[in-house]
Amino acid sequence: MDADAEAARQFIEAAAPDYISLIDRDHRVAGLYNMVNVPQAVWIGESGQIVRPPEVAGTYDTVRSRDKVTREVPTEVQARRDEARIVYQDAIRDWVKHGAESKHVFSPAEAKARLTVPDDNVATAHANFRLGQFLMRQGKPDAAEPLFIEARRLHPESWTIWRETEEKNDAGLAAGPTFWARIDALGEKKFYDTVDMAGMPG
Image (cartoon, rainbow, N blue to C red; front, side):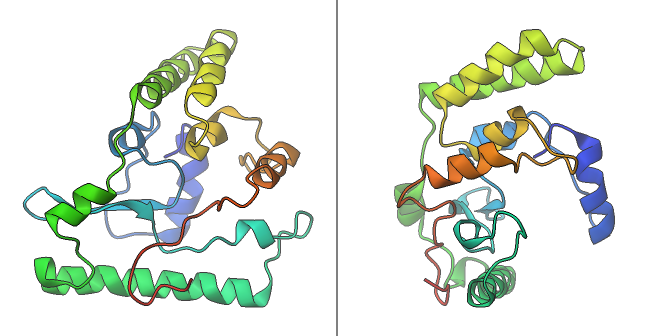
């Protein structure tokens, strides 16, 4: 999810994937599946049913311990993040191999119970965001800004909307003082929730 396709291109080219990568400029996937941050994933089986609702995909809540100046993360926290990535990737491989018999797949009832359905505010926030993005592409940033402000107000949990509509640094990231102030304002709440998965570090 990146409103600026060129900003995303460098990461895709560096990874050199052997599959097609799609850039969701209007965050339609986030709106459909109520995704609020990246990286997030949703597992959809061959029958088209969700077997794992949207969740943090292969990372750990390291942001709170990152040095604001050097951007370095303590070694032990980095190790937990690396472990989380391995556990998540191995779980995907297990699902590919065993399908519905994978220990990581939820039953239909479990998947439904864990699914968060967007409310009217969230749906309206995404509509404002998409309209704002359309206006931005038409060269009308002044008309887009009130829509972005309303999108952030209606859906404050969405880091994806916030990142796309805040001021960005030279690297194209919304990672300046405003970002860190927002992180500090989380209090005891995590930036990334721990994934409910066997073997995942707590």
